[in-house]
Image 1 (cartoon, helix red, strand yellow):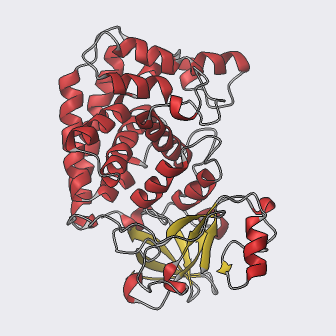
Image 2 (cartoon, one colour):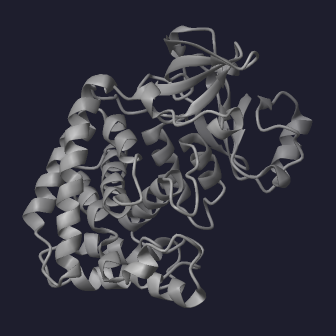
Length: 384
């Protein structure tokens, strides 16, 4: 088998790289003796079916055939859906700004507005989940709080759709994502918008937002599962989270989904005190938090949802060119559609050209950080 990626830090295994052909019993024994619990197998490079999807394997268990992936629904081309998603993002910003303002002033949340917004976003997610998810990552300091809620809503619905939940469950997941941070409306603005690190006292105040959110929503006509997601989305699988220090199955699955979507959007967003991680790097880092903080099974589904190389990721190709991922909806997670624009050897720009990797012999050899190449924002390379 070909190991595409070991899900854990390099310090936890004896191999000098994360990607290699597993061909000897000795290497298999070395792998089993490590603390690595999960890894990605690329079936196209081993002895399994050449067109098989990459699967996540449990190290200590015998390799098993991956269950067949559900047939993907027909999707709208990303470029086409981006235009509609942009209008939804603009409206969502206004709706959420008004909603958060009402809550801050003590007025109740208008469920009708929230439900209509969730329905519009759900329609876009069904047409092409990557359009809304990708646009929602683009935020400024002024609109972060509002668009973060929108982004988590979009991620939640795409994840629920991937997990083959019912239409009603998908909308419920979206509402949970939309309202999960409503308690921040009751956090003092000097703490909420502080550009630097919070003091221990300020951090305790910030932690109270999950309890405050559930408290605000309880008198309203909000489903119990949405209340739980609001209250539990900072709980961790090992019991070290807040506010209840719940552990494992004590945390509702919808809350575990919310935690993953919340963290992903937070770590990929630029903040005044920290630059966001590139999407692919965020997935790599989050994989290391599985088990202790995040639900492993749900995280695996999340990776399938956004793609191993999400839209907007900078990648290095086997022909020594840099490209940005512009669509992750192809049949293989490892071969998205990319736009080549830079020569890694000469460090010179190239005329942008689109490349369907699943129809090419060229492969992605690594994720890259734009900062390491002196590149500015890559949004213009994948947006219309």
